[in-house]
Length: 306
Image (cartoon, rainbow, N blue to C red; front, side):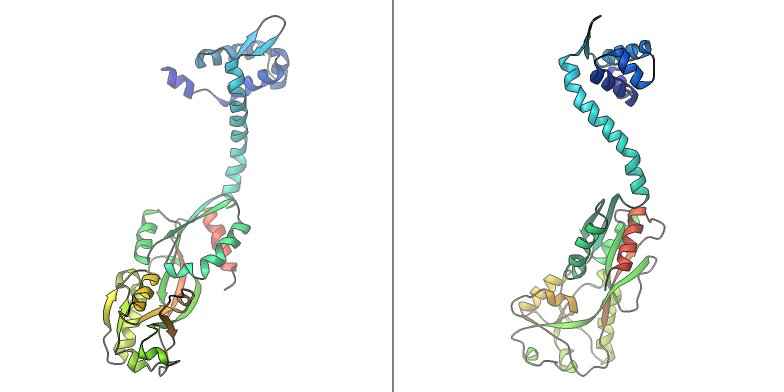
C-alpha cells in the first residue's frame, strides 16, 4: 500500500482521537472521554503520526503539548468532524425535500411574470433547496429531460394540448396578442380587423420549438383560407419583438410579452374573430424521476397563486 493510500484510509475515529488528546493534552483524560483505555489510544496516535509522517504531540512523563504540525491540524480536524456530524442531518433534510437542488428549464416567456413571482417565494419557502434556472426552448427541454440533465421545465404549448410522454401541470393560460410596429397602419386601430391582419407578413418561431402553438397559429390562417406569410423566423420572444420593431412583420405573442416594452412596438387584440389562438405554460417533468426536492417544488407550484 502506498503512502497516498494510507492517508486516504485515515478514519474519522482517528481524527476524533487526535482532537480529544489535543483538547485534553492528557492521554488518560482523553481516553476516558472516548470511553476507551489509554494504551490503545496511545497506539492509535502513534499510528496516525506514522501515516502522516509528522509528530503531532511532544510528550513526556509530565506533560503533553501540540507540535506545530498538530496545532495546524487541530482546527481542520475539528471542521472535518463537524461536517461529518452534519451529514446525517443533511441526508435527512434531503430525504424530506428540505435540501438539494431543482434544475428548472424555462422558455423565455416564463421570465416575464412567472419566474419573478416564483423565485423569491420559493427561496422563502425552501431556503435549503437551490433552484437552478436554465433557459431553453421546448425541444431542448425534452432532450434535457430525456438525459436527466434537468428535473423539470416550463414549456409553452397551445391551449388544451398537453406535452406527450411527460407529467405536467398547468401554471398559466393566456391569449395571444399581436405585436405590431408602432408606425404600421393597423396599429392605429384599437382592435385591427383580423382579415387585414392575416394578409400581413409575420415573424414566427420555428415549429420545432413549440409545435402545438405553431400549428394553432397556422390553423387560424387556414380557417380563413389564408397561409401564413412568414417573413422571418426567430426563437426567443424578445428577438421576435425586436424584429417587429424593425418592420419585418407582425407577430403573435403571449399576452405576458407586453411586459417587454420595446420602443416602436405596440400590442393589439384583433377584432372580428370569435376565437383566437391561446397558449398555456405548463410545468413538465418525468414521472419516473421525482426526487424529494422536486416533489417539494411541485407542491409549491400547485399551491402558488395564479
